[in-house]
Length: 402
Image (cartoon, rainbow, N blue to C red; front, side, top):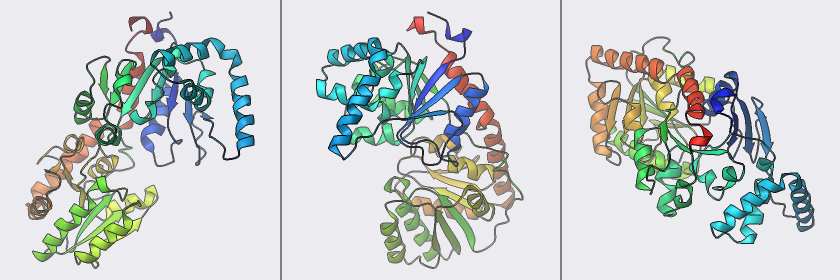
C-alpha cells in the first residue's frame, strides 16, 4: 500500500454541523491541512452558515413524510451500488459485531455519502459522533481518528457507561486537547490500543492582543464568555461574587452567551441580590466580545467540566487576569500563580477568596502575571503551531503498520 508520506492525505472530517464563522478551531485546522496540500471533505448534517473552506457533503436526514422517506431510501441505496464492495465489507464487519439488519440499513442510509469518497482518514470531530460508526473507516480501508474534547468523554459516559468499548479496538489514532482528557480516555476503558496525540486548542493571538494594559479601577470589571449551561459553573461564580459584595468589594460582572440555564441563572442573580452587579449580554459577535474583554480587568471560568476553553486563551492573550476552576483542561490552560489562579471547582468561598487575593496583589505582580500569560499564549497556543501539529497527526503512521 502506498506510504501516506508520499502523497497528500485525503481526510474526511465528520461534524454534526459545519463550523460557524467564530469557530476558529475547526476553520483553522481545515485551512492549515489544505494549505499543506491535503484534500479535506467535511461530512455533516447541516451547513447553516455556508461554510466553504473545503468541500461540504450533507448527510441524509429522515423525512417525516413516509412516502418521501421510502423514495429517498430507494434512491440512496441505489446510489450505493457502484460501491458494493465497500458496502459488503461494512455489512460483514457490522454483522461480526452483532448488529441487526435494521441497524445496519439505518447506518448505511445515514452515512451513504461517506462510502462514495476515497479517503486515507475518517476523523470524527467529537467522540460521540463515532458511536455507531466504528466500522465505517475499516470498510473503506481507511484509518479512523477520533477527537475527545470534554463533554464527550467527561460527561456522556457517565450516563452511558462503556459506550466506547467497541471504539477502542477500531480507532487508529486518538486526538485529545489536554492531559486530563487523556486520563479520562483511560478511565473509560482505553488500554493503549492506538496512539493518543495531544493537540491543544489555539487562537488568533494577533487578533486577541493587548492594546493597552487595563488599570484596576472600581468597580472592578469581571467577564465570562460561556454557554449558559450547568457545566460552566456560573451559579457557583455568582455565589462567590455575592460573598465579595458582602465583603464590600465593588464590581460589575458581565456574562456573554446564551443557553438553556438562562432563566435559572437570572433567578439565582435575583436571589443572591446581584441584579445591580451582574449583566447577561447574550450572544455577541467576535468583535463585540473583544471589545468587552478590552474594558475588563478579570476573567472567570469556574466550570465544573471543561475540555480546555478557547475563551480563557483569548482572555489571557488580551492581558486579563484569569481565575479558572481545576476542571479537566483548565488547570493546564492557566499555570497556577504564574499566568493566573486555579481554584478547586464547586467551592464558591475559595473562589471568592481567590478573587479578593487577586484584586489586592501589588500592581507589579499583576502586570507580571498578565505579561506571562500573553507571552505563553502567543508562543504555545497560536494557529500556526496547531496547524503544523495536525499535519503531522495524519502523517505519523503508515497504513501498513496498523
